[in-house]
Length: 165
Ligand code: MG
Image (cartoon, rainbow, N blue to C red):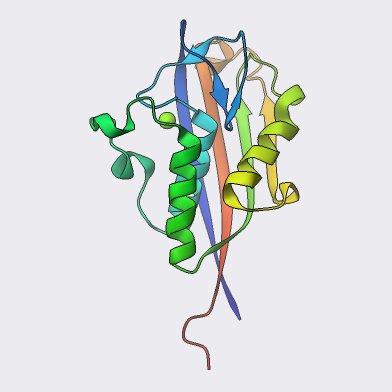
């Protein structure tokens, strides 16, 4: 018998000229980057919060406070790997991830498979367990006005029932 836990994560970052853009652990050369204490990878931040939420293990802001210089310009892939280690230590396996990235630019589709492969690599999953979808906001609200990138993610965790037999 397995236990299942679903988690949801959200993140948004504003564009900031002069910074490199990294989404889902993949660079977008020539595109405007995002403001943030870490590398501002909003997609990985949403995935991290979905995973932490599923395990009820807090949230990214509590684990990696932006007041702590240790996380200045942090590689979010390393943060995700750190979370994955803690989940595994607690007996959790990631069943799948599904994420949506909302921005007017860059166009995500050309890099979607690279992003899926990168997230899967960090989590030790097959890429078929990681879905990433890009959307515009049809010109509406802040993301639609091109002010930044908004990401939503859900994650399913599974773990063997601990009190069986
Ligand atoms: Mg963030």
